[in-house]
Image (cartoon, rainbow, N blue to C red; front, side, top):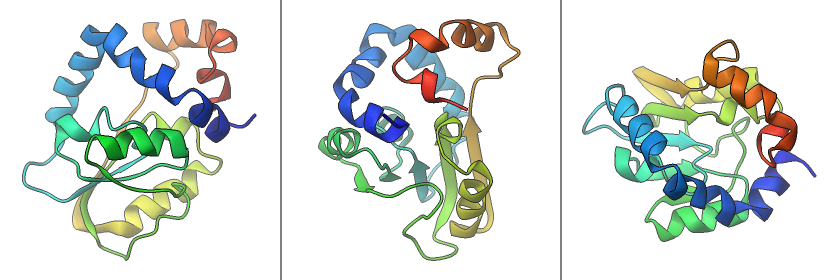
Length: 155
């Protein structure tokens, strides 16, 4: 199974992680709020179940896993079922693009970043959230990677 199929099959389990790990989730949201421009049109690439988009005020997302997209839509996000490497938007459409961990799961990260840049308005921001492999948390994830349904597919 590829990562899209995994996220599609286990979307509910993925989403429940945020409730079970509320402290980590809330601290991530608080950190991201410092970088997300207010009153701006944003896009989340790899919107998943909408757990980041909703509290950050992002109304539009891209998600290739249908079950994840469906949960995100129930949270009020306008979701386009597409991949990061081929975004279905015109050039210069967004003030910022948010990519949380998604970059680790795309087949062509360079193309995904090119696409994010393409859809940005001049002066816009690409905000990337990821775990540094060399950090304590990164090493913890790496040590448990083979056991994880999700992270075993990360690059």
